[in-house]
Length: 142
Image (cartoon, rainbow, N blue to C red; front, side, top):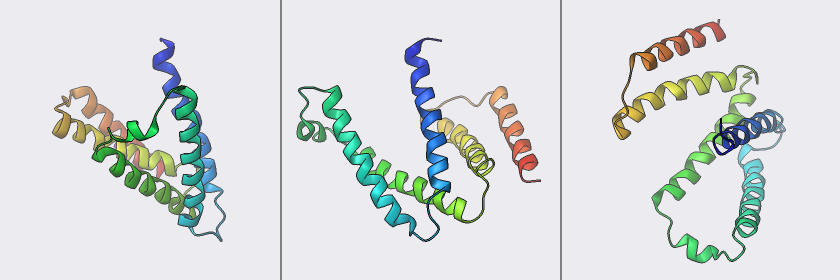
């Protein structure tokens, strides 16, 4: 594979490993939203530093004029993802199965989102994949 195709996947995988470890290690005594306040402060700071590092003559105010609804909804979705992960681990899910269960359910849902919104074709291969995922959910929760 070509590097430009591989590095984003590697970044996602490595980040997800740390994401799940940190979600599971969030202290039980702290309210998840207090913890997320620190998380988003650090994330905003890192994003701003990376913006100016990668765009030497960048103008963040000018960039923000181009934003649409997706940036705001993504913010809401990220809070849901982060809080859901912390609460998932607080509820007692194992790090080895909690992420797999929600990822399988998400993957199945995204097949239908792709078909309904983006007119992607649901092939026999995708249907077979859904059935295998459902079998996996059964086996993981057995």
